[in-house]
Length: 277
Image (cartoon, rainbow, N blue to C red; front, side):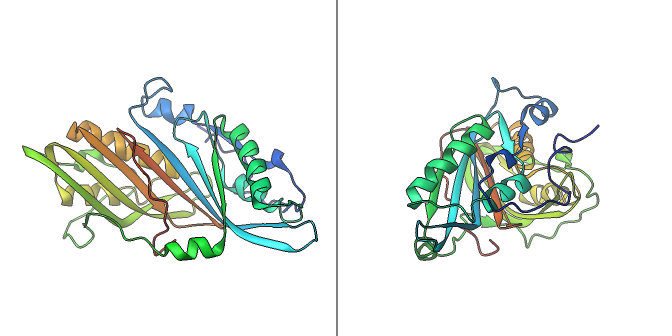
């Protein structure tokens, strides 16, 4: 079975166009992966957002002087489509020789084009380097489980059967790990990331079992968004929690990083970069 991205620019030689070309954006329907996970648009058990951060954003002022900035794009988790990452990069590079009177004018163009591709309103912020620098590097909440001593075997696909939980008193905790790795389903290139899980409920997640489960993604081929959705669903089935949030902060590639957030409830997502980003 072919991946939905087979007709995208991903994994193919591409000419970098330097004149504004919104037609370069390549939407990929979320429906195929939702069906694979037993979901539909009407039955999504989560809400959330995919934060994309662009570190290679540039345009020209009316005087012809270049400007560089950092772009932040928030795509709703229930949008009909994701945007294939290489097409996103090609589109952003097509702005390099385009003239805009202000960052606000560029934000309007970006929001219009990205919303059309995703099929839902995309929030856009064009940010100065000074503003992003002032935020610094974020520290993750909760307990890091990376030093746990676990024995790990398979790496080809996620293994939810490794997950364990113990019933007891209500627990509320946050865990994180920097050991996530998966592969691009089209090119096979590695995708490196950090995962955070926050939950509350009557079942306590066994930390070592979660680490082993997380590492089982190591050779798994899927996009960032679907990896996080799979984790969310597996943990929701296991823990039956009152509240659950799962998010991943992926290392950038081609000037873009992708950061999917999925939660049972509305959360104030922190989009500050991590040390590897």
